[in-house]
Length: 256
Ligand SMILES: Nc1ncnc2c1ncn2[C@@H]1O[C@H](COP(=O)(O)OP(=O)(O)OP(=O)(O)O)[C@@H](O)[C@H]1O
Ligand SMILES: [Mg+2]
Image (cartoon, protein in one colour):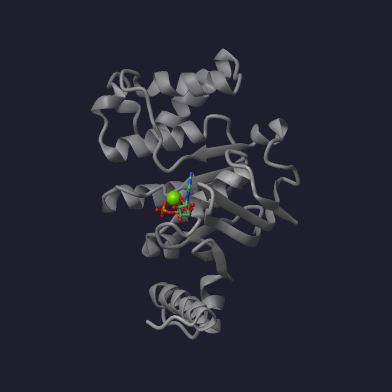
């Protein structure tokens, strides 16, 4: 059974009286327990919109979303979910451990559990040597790692990560990748969005390609490559997107 599911999930942003922007259009997704699932797509394709709808941060125009069979506003379900937003904002004058204590408080962890969890997470993301450093002195990679640690504070079964490797150098990307694989080994389900094809290619069991709010393709990389006669993910990405754009131009009568 799918642990994350969307049914005809749609979000239209209404800008002024006449202008409507399609954030997501009738998306049907099924993500299985224990897999790393990657949502891929160019800028503005609806990746963040989809994740925020699943988490109940945005309300859908129509359609349904479920995590563990429960709707996005279900508080009980949120105890089992961790989220790393695209551009998180952290308090500059907190240290890493202080930030994690703050998140532990939000989840209502008792002091002993929080203490153990924070020690464990700081080691996991290799920030245990920077315990006294304020977040304003963190590098981008360190901020990304403390964000990951914060998203894991409640030991979630499901981890939702919006562009977890943006701004990271190759070593940072590799470390994040290894961490995700380790979390998968622990049985966690990971849904991530990215436009770094090589990262996705290495870590994801299945992928979905979004474009202009539409879900163009879903499946394993091998399966999709065969289906679209693509040589690799880059080729697949370009082929699915060009095919969609050409079809749109045919229906609207536009020429490119
Ligand atoms: N709050 C908003 N108001 C109006 N339009 C929005 C809003 N948020 C997103 N959009 C529009 O919805 C579409 C999808 O945006 P979204 O942020 O989901 O894309 P994305 O795939 O996450 O892009 P990126 O790779 O740049 O993060 C875009 O056209 C965007 O301009
Ligand atoms: Mg985004």
